[in-house]
Amino acid sequence: MPLELPPPLARALRDRTIRKITLSERRPAAPPGLARVQIRPLALKDRPVWQFTLQIEQQAIHENLDLPQATRRLAQLLAEAFRQVHWSTADSECSARPPRQPGGSWQVHETPRQKPAGTPPPDAGHDRTKQYLIPQGVPCPFLQEMGVMNPQGQVLRPMMAKYRQINRFLELVRDALVELPRDRELRVIDFGCGKSYLTFALHHLLTTIEHRPARITGLDLKRDVIENCQEVARRLGCSGLEFHQGRIDGFEANEPVDLVVSLHACDTATDDALVQALRWQARVILAVPCCQHELAPQLAHASLEPLLRHGIARERLGALVTDALRALVLERQGYSTQMVEFIDLEHTPKNLLLRGVRRTHQPLSLTATRHQELLAYRSLFHLAETHLERRLIEQGLAEPRDPVTAAPAASTAADSTGQPN
Image 1 (spheres, rainbow, N blue to C red):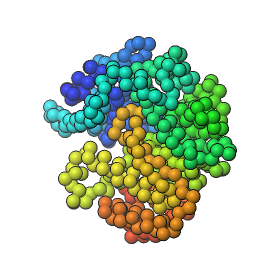
Image 2: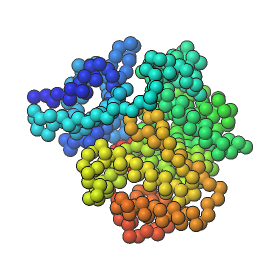
Image 3: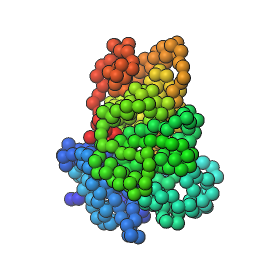
Image 4: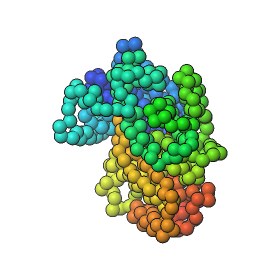
């Protein structure tokens, strides 16, 4: 008997109100190499389809399916390959687990989105009146090339979320420009660049809007993705923009780096990007972490059990504990930090951006204070020394001053590529 989807998911698929679906928690019997699946609505020549992106080792495989095909494929993947499905709509974030026994009930959790009072409805012209750094109605070559805008400068409806994210990212970068030198070419590294919507946006901001000379490098593990980015950059004539395939921890800049960007580098790959930035003493760091799996298994103290027995609560607590620890480590290493809201590309709850600005001088007393705070923080949550801390010690950027808690951390599901294994 084939697995039936939970009614809220089936209804949202039918009504096409879903923004994105993510399948996670791989089953032991899943096909070899299949690590993750994401699904999003797409319009191909005015034909509505659901695009399945299957992450198989270092390849992203796409399947464009109509509604009946997508429903069957999704049910198959949940029955054979994954234990959890998460989907987001304009009104809520939802997750579900298949029944443990045939004929059982789905475990469905729904969290309504909180909308500020006075928020206008979607058709009230809110997007048309907001002033964006890349405005609608003005053709933008890289957005046209990447399928976000049409030749008249109008944003395609399915790409509106991506358009908002690009502009929010540019606002955050522009706020940081005051910290970067003006007397020379800027050097920028984007770790885990993926399809590079934001890498091209960064190039557009610096060279076209701000008229700042810059050399930008995008790095990603996937060869096909990098080759596509190189071809797009060639067609657009993006001077000073280059793309390379490789691991985060294996990349050498061989010159001073001003800005390091790491957006959605998976799990401890974010930490490898932070280590590189600290090694180069980058002036500004902008990181949007993703899939923080390292510390979640360690959050097992009895006093937290009422919270941790719920999977979604454990996941979110693990993410917050991880990101706050990263901010504390950056402060110990001489950076002032902020955690700010970031509009995620796919509208997931993973929307925190960690911003670090290197201090020109940090007293030793402040470094010692931050280190003691770090030890107390780890003690509070019963955490072993983290991947980030161990990598800093390996690079000679920190001393092994805490042997008591320097136990091996739990294994993680990502390497230094910026992508899940």
